[in-house]
Length: 197
Image (cartoon, rainbow, N blue to C red; front, side, top):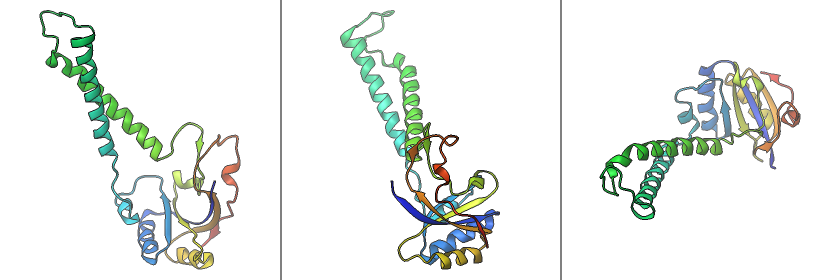
């Protein structure tokens, strides 16, 4: 797995973080990720992230659910095992609408949840490196990836100048791996001490 070097800036308030993200992007540093304890409106646009396409995936899953359920009921009740139920025609489309709707919703919901988990790499026993354990509590963490042209000392002083209260350099795996946080200490390898700005 690829191990890369990152400069991590820790912020205690969301306003300095928001402005720092804009300044980091303007100066041309490679912004890896920003971790916050709660959603910040407009931060995705400040980071330059595109809008999500999960609604398109949900529509495709819904079309699959509708098509598959109508095809299955048509085949079952008109070809494979046609029944005379209360004198209704074998192709009784109005009677199939409720179950078709329910299966459509089921396919869309399950499909979007699984797609979200795949894109965010969320699953039982899947681990990722945590740059700052307090980013889920009360701190905001900005992670900048070091490129061959990046001067770490210059970047650290730049982060200190734009409001970071703590700065450190970490070597971290960019992907995910299988394991448990309570059994494996791999999470903390390469993490250096926080240097106050």
